[in-house]
Length: 92
Length: 286
View (tube, each protein chain N blue to C red):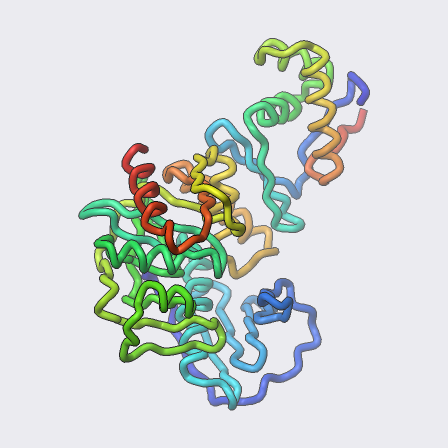
């Protein structure tokens, strides 16, 4: 994942914070997905316009993890959300 | 329960529908037991060989057209336990595949899950030990701020044959076997106490499909709980964006207000009493 990549939520995705988690609804299929508190924070940073590098930096500050682990988590979640069509790259 | 108005049409064979259904329900063998179509602004739910139900766009009016070979019992079952809950849910109310029992004069607990998970069995077992049931399969919830109430349904409890034999060994008069569901309706059976007043919902247990070696109850975080509630919601329109958005908002808000736990257990009649004890203890500890 490019460190300067930014992402957006597609129009067919709804999201709601429920407790510390995030629930996503894909309106195309009526399928629901849940993100745990870590995933919810990553999503939140991405939606604010943070790129991969900034998101990783923030996660390192918020959670007791190394930068390497944070980056791995961010990359993995982004890849998963892109594969499911729940996230889309922003045009540069 | 909130209601919809039913109008009956004369029996007729089911006409061919060329469109593809937007949703189907399948039975245990994979056969289609219900098909969902849009007909203009309205909905058509077809139970092959039994009846067509046309539901108005606002969910308030339903027209039923049975086939000539359909029995009254089968049509009545489909109306009460499938179409009416779908219509009421479509009006914006919370209606789920669930049972509920009254723990005491104020509180209730609910059991969620698709058919066959043991919702009715647990409802009957709890009722027989002094916790009357509010509903055995269709759970309507009314939310008032942070408080959710389980709403009682008409006294009717349908059990599979093994559960009926285990819990009710004396054959009861008035029991009606419903071929379309496979269960027997122990309607208004005086051995199974029913609760006719709403109760505050203290907890909900989502029953796992497979037996587990031990009884386990795991508190679901709010997001997972919301998904579990949606998965067990009666939903007429599963593809329309407006309908999905409305349901999403409602259920996410409601799920935060009800402690929801995953329940896995051995599904062993000999341990049913132990299971009920643990459910009650867990609920009281919340």
